[in-house]
Amino acid sequence: MELIAQINGAVNSFVWGAPMLILLIGVGILMTVRNKGLQFRKFGYAMKNTIGKIFKRTHAGEGEITPFQAVSTALAGTVGTGNIAGITTAVTLGGPGTLFWLWVTALIGMATKYSEVLLAVKFRERNKYGDWVGGPMYYIKNGLGKNWKWLGIIFCVFAALAALGTGNAIQAGNIVGSIHTAVLAFNPDFSGEATLNLVLGIVLAILAAVVLFGGVKRLGAVTEKLVPCMAVVYILACLAIILYNASSLPTVFHDIFVGAFTPNGVTGGAVGSMFLVISWGMKRGIFSNEAGLGTAPMAHATTSEREPVKQALYGIFEVFMDTIIICSLTGLTLLCSGIDLNYGVTGEISLVSEALGTLFTQKGGALVIAVALALFAFSTILGWALYGSRCCEFIFGSKAIRPYQVIYVLMIVVGATVDLELVWNIADTLNGLMALPNLIALALLSGVVVKCTKEYFAKGKSLEEPK
Image 1 (cartoon, rainbow, N blue to C red):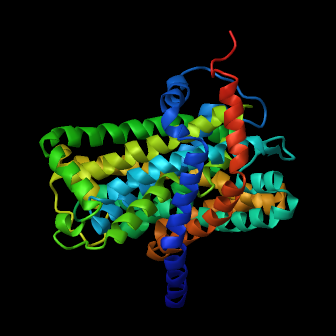
Image 2 (image 1 turned 135 degrees about the vertical axis):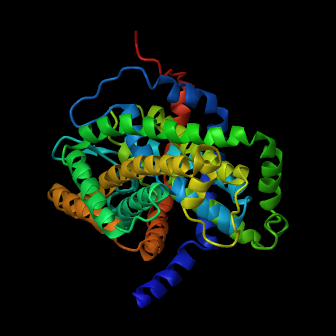
Image 3 (image 1 turned 120 degrees about the vertical axis):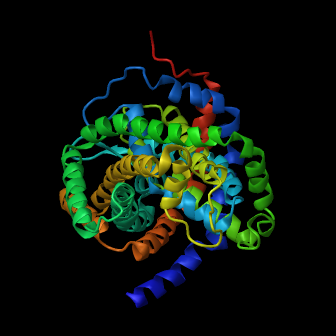
């Protein structure tokens, strides 16, 4: 295990070093420039025609789901422990300034996610069951040509493995961890952690199996109800803390903007490297909203929407909701609450629970986090199950879907019962490795994105359905 950790550490330092961060941001800037700042110019249009129409009834045919179900499934995969645990780690190890770089990454990432979703819908195809399948591997094969299929296979290998860690074991481990914290808040003498974790792991595995084995339409139906519920619970709780401590907001924003460039002046020297602040902000931003990783396009490709640009607008909304709203709320809740963040030391989820406890009491804070994280993480387990299955299907054919799903469900129990530190680190590495093929494809297909976008808006199309 030590050898594996050392090898992974060496690969991780390369994968998430300056070159990768430059590549991720570089592709985002490329897409922003080539589309003339679409995420800023058309932001109002995108919000009006995505979140503004979530209550409008739409229907999907066989093998497809509605546009909102597609974005719900994508958000289910992106809104997870990264929004709570990941941001807590970023703030404690990088200081308040990480939030600034988190926002920069999100604003640029909107263009990246828009491009990914557009290409996924444009180059998708039907599998043998009649379901829509798409994502980086398909826009590599169908957009760049079959001679590039090997690049799509590389993406799928890393993504299928990352799904078992990032989207599964880590999520399960954080669910049982938050529930254990809540139990301790009510019963400090509780000593049955191992049994509790095993029971919770089995329950989570059964619930996931019921949804996953029901197919893509059942997945879409569950996530469109689960995602809004989990978002509302967490957003309201965080807003309550921020408003309760509104007088501290000027100081908090001062620390965020000053700490982004001179971190030692804000953290008392506990964080002295500006590169550390930038890298934590960008890493956790990307880990949270997954812009550039190539995962969410696999969910968006299942939509009943035929116009790629229409569905791509949901990519802008997705990054905005995940990072600008939910991640920011986590960071601001921590910074406004007045609790000791102990900069320079890895922060645990219990810090967010403690921050919420300043208003809701310790028991109430622990309960809010347990419920929110359970909903967040379980939805991520469902979303990433689709991603891993699609990747296995691309490599081995449709016959590989069910065996992979069985392994995936069993990994939930493993994640609930083992130490996750090494799994976190390996998953982080796999996220970087799967991003490489996707970013190469995005750069090479940027012209297609520009052409589709120009054609759509030149025709003056509206997202309104025909009367």
